[in-house]
Amino acid sequence: MIKHIVMWNVKGTTPEEKHVIAQGIKAKFESLVGTVPGLLSLEIGVDCSRVSYACDVVLYSEFRDHDSLKAYADHPAHLKIRDELKDLRTARFQVDYARA
Image 1: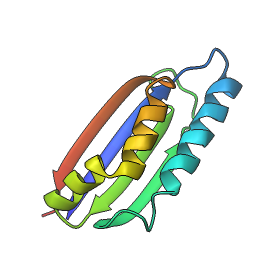
Image 2: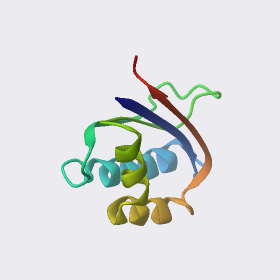
Image 3: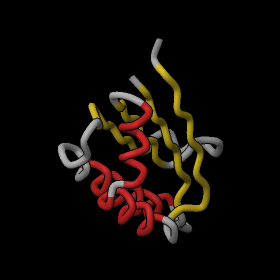
Image 4: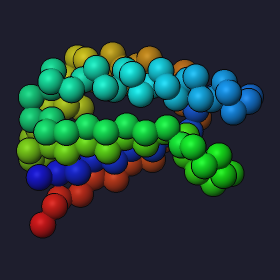
């Protein structure tokens, strides 16, 4: 199993603006559940701490294997969301790791 974690900071001049954008991102990724083969689970959360060093959104997902993660990366539904996000995010961080 491969775990895929992505965190974003989003545009917005107020916490409320950032929250609206983050909720939109959350809804977009949740729409992928059941549409991408090999995607075992997906959870996405919006930061509620509002501390200065926190990211605004986190995605936690699990894939059957590396090939499933690669297929997700290239899946048209994922690519559409990724393209929509490029103008909404200010930073992106990622970690992928295999569960032993």
